[in-house]
Length: 327
Ligand SMILES: Nc1ncnc2c1ncn2[C@@H]1O[C@H](COP(=O)(O)OP(=O)(O)OP(=O)(O)O)[C@@H](O)[C@H]1O
Image: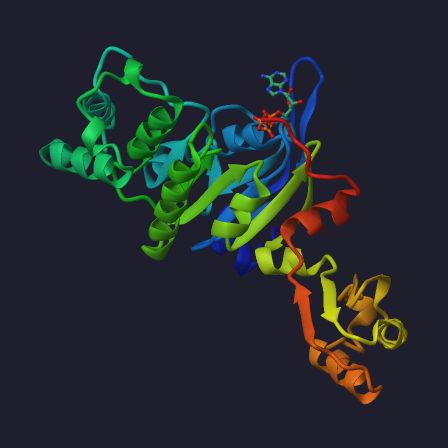
């Protein structure tokens, strides 16, 4: 009996047990269950070599999975590739460019090769896409003179030549300077506001936190967590910091309320907040209650704040290691 939840049917990307073992025996993706809600900006996060590109290539029908299945916009891949792929824009591993053609001519040619593209609107759509990625001024330059970042933008422009329901972007900010990264992030937000689901891979936690509503974390071919960015960050502890002339009393009260790893530095006391989760659910620790408890105990509190737990904290908590990647 095949039972599929509405959530699966609604997903822009959905995989079950998706696995890829390369010929050499390398298990690149191991039984991946991914669920990307429509309308989300979904960050696919993991260090280099964790299997992101392999997953994306399977999703787009570029390589066959060893086992498991993948659906794009509700349709099975690679079987439905012909009907689904026109609704999906993709930027994967440095776009193939004709180096001797200008950026604009590359796009015109790319669009001409797409049987679903309307030739009457081609020039206008190419101009709009160039403008969107900030390449209008450099459109007349040959692609071979483009920097890595400009090539990346041109690839993104190619993905934006037609309206898309889903964009799949493999490391879209690769090779961009900080300003370029900001521009791509705001473009991604804009596209999401227009209703496009964006699935983007990155090894930059920071980037995912800034732009994504949801994320999945990969390590060594396996999915170690997925959910909304807020949920993922909430799975890790945040750190509490208070300023008080009564640090010793403060430590005693905080300890009674489950705060651990308390450190006194002059008038500053900091500690780890208890992990929210199943164990703590019956007695959720409200920061306001904690503050009130300090005041009740006569501790003079001058400043009170909790540092928001970041995805990086979550990643470290999940894997027991730092998010230390090269490049
Ligand atoms: N064509 C291939 N043949 C054999 N092994 C491969 C092949 N492509 C990738 N691998 C291996 O599979 C694993 C996952 O690689 P993959 O490129 O999917 O990771 P990634 O997370 O996208 O990393 P990166 O950000 O560096 O691209 C790595 O160990 C890699 O060496």
